Length: 362
Image (cartoon, rainbow, N blue to C red):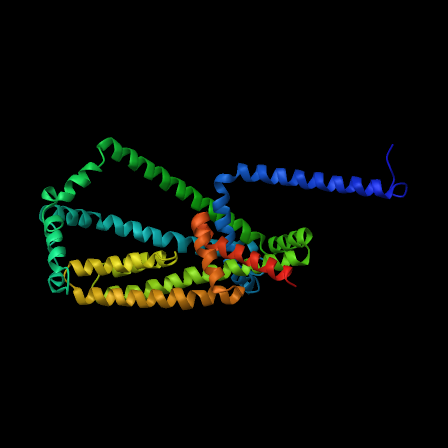
């Protein structure tokens, strides 16, 4: 016999609460099963979400323009195509340049193996340690590799033919997986951009229903955090690549444009740009261009210091109202925990922490 609400309000309330908990448990179980099923594609979907959040203001602006008004599919197709060009064209350029330079690199390595690397003149003018450094260089780097003490170490860790074939096959499989993942990422991005305002309204309504008015506000602040992090990492990285690319060009570094692109990609990651420009400075130093090497190193240190300590924190923390220390913890901790995707997830998590703290101390 069913109990009516008017007959026993307390029993009806208990039954209603039980049904709600059962529904919540069912929804959570279905969500976990769905995530487990799509676990291989979750990173691609997350990257698509980050990119969609980053270009959302542009999407909203273009929706009001005449060519794209009431044409969400066309707008999503144009934006997805532009973003794919941004992803694919630099990679193709790097691959083409790498293939073109493969023979030169091989000849350079063969030359080093035959003749060694001569001791730079600057070592003889060092205020201290010149004799020891020159002696070590002469015995390890300035002689042919076949007679160098380093040759046995390299040979001990060398690969046999079967191992090389195995490694090559593994690299090919990883490259194929990366291409498939990139294709799925672009398809997911197209679907998100096609949904447009409808998707945004649904996410806002879902967060409001789950967490109340604070949920919608939290979702908006997380979106702003992800967007500002993209601007801080990508835009500042591109700026560093352009400035250091100009320095490479005037210093006489070969393929300055390509190296500038590599620097831009490295600068999007914390503390990776110095690896590139110090490597370029070392190449100039080894080849006798001491003044150019010093100029590249000093320029790189100044550019990276200004970008990492002033420009990037201002862009990221300014729009999210996060302290610089929280931004740094979010970026570095996110990268350590979640990989590249953590660069954007970390600051968003710090934003959640800040919102919860502000709510608690009110």
